[in-house]
Length: 135
Image (cartoon, rainbow, N blue to C red):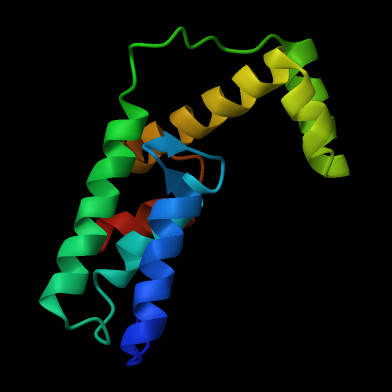
C-alpha cells in the first residue's frame, strides 16, 4: 500500500476488505494484518490523505470486530484448542470447517486477536507493542 502505483494500492485495499475482514468477520489473519496497516500510518511513503483515512477506517473495523458481544464466545477447552492447533499445522481447512467446535475456536482466536490489537497492554510481544506505540 505504500507503493506509488494507485492500482496496486486499490488492489491491496480490496484484499483487506474482502479477505482479511470480510463482511465484518475477522479471521486469524486479521490481527497481524491490522498491525501492518497501523505501521503504514507512520510510513513516510503513505502521504495520500484518502489512503490514510481508508487505513484508519480498516483499523476501526478491526476494533469493532474485537468488540463483538452478540455471539456466544467461549474459550475453547484444551482438547478443542489442541485439535485446532493440529489442524492449522496440518493445513487441514476441511477438518476445521467440518467441525463446529473447531470453527468456533478459530473464530474466538480471531476476535481475541482483534481485541489485542486495540489493547496493546495485552499483546504477547514487545515487537507488536512498539508498532502501535509509534502511531
